[in-house]
Length: 292
Image (tube, rainbow, N blue to C red; front, side, top):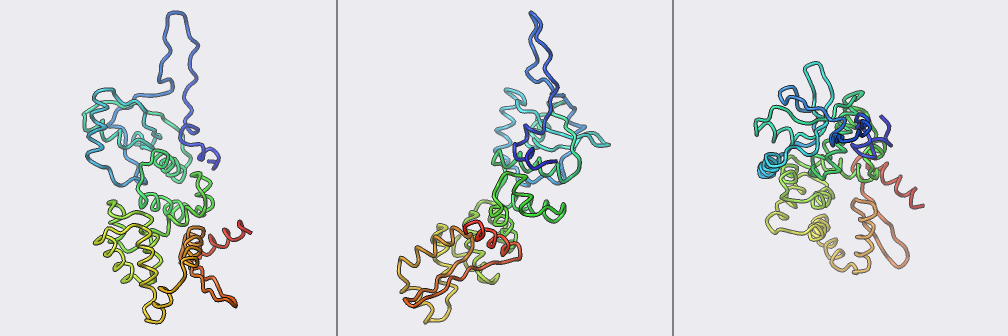
């Protein structure tokens, strides 16, 4: 499956039957190419990127389906035991709870599980249905299970390579922090700030402080910069650093998506860019080459 087709979204993958020519006095079907499939024949996708299904949101969807029916068909592929969901698990779940017998569906051919995951991932991303951690986990499956590089994933889902690499870094967080991100207690921005810490105990301390004080992402970044300088002299240096140098550091952090330190003096200095894996280093090098 080509990255170009995937980048265009789910619609580019669905090939409904051609509409029949209109005959006088007859209406053409508004759902040409859509098949009604018994719910009992449809099985969930084991590689579904979305793990969390909000109960209140599902109740609202049930009310809508009860009133209007399933407006947007689900997407499935044929398997030996019936059909497997590719996109539309919330609609499928809601219809089952309503004890519906059938659901409208597109049946498409998918070459392999990697293509199926790509389609499911794209559908969820386009609907903004995934939280940051679910998105990172889906990228990780494409990378580790199906051997796709960060660049290939980026092309497939229509995002920048740096976005994929930064997303995957979230999986390096301790389990407690990942759980907090999944629940929405902290944001992906908070987590990227936390990842600037070098040890798990430091990460946990920063995380607890963020929760206890309801810190913004910018405040969390400032806190981490202070905590990284444990020696008194270094702390004094950080406090005395000019606002101009701090502003430049913040700009560089925005550009490189990682911790950057500017060591400035009137006679010269250095810029330190931190990385956390080979992929992260490759991402930074690619970014520098792009800039140059």
